[in-house]
Length: 289
Image (cartoon, rainbow, N blue to C red):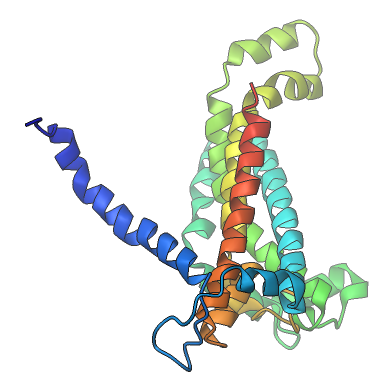
């Protein structure tokens, strides 16, 4: 009888935990997405309906299509803004110095805050009666003076995106800083000796070597943006109307407000499929060589 290697026994607890906490729920929810289950009417899954839940989502549910559009806007703006700010901030503080070192330490503070607390804080700051951010923005941009941010669909989406960027951009800056530190300085110095301008050094030397790190940051931020829920729940509650209701929030509404578990599972797997497609696209684009 073949003896099982010791490392298999050492990995067994971790693998069992992953199977119990990730693989089983994924498999069970996939099966559930092909069944009908109104939790308010029955405590057990109902009849097998095949692809009916998925077909209903794309053919006869305008709220789902609105959530899909809101998710596309939120994810695209969130990822682009986070990448741009993280890259710019990393380039500014990559040099050694006391101020830059202090900035790196302070950058971890927004990330360690709870997303729910961030949503509540932004809701307080944008309050039309006593919100400091509301009044400051009104002073700097007169066209926005007196506007109720969370009652306007466009401004509410901007507020949700800004809160998520504020949460994640500092952490992603530290990741990009690690990528910049791994770039050999000799390549940049050789370009400067050849007479390249700072912009040319960044464009032709630094950025190509940094692309794999930026690709990882983009994948991670896309994952976090697609499943963003806490901030949206506490800041805008999906409103006004359904203007900031993303797919993750839509799944929550269907599952825990309408108690339609099979339909919610199908919507969740649409979200999972979108996540997989975007992740594969990013990775193939960045690591195509």
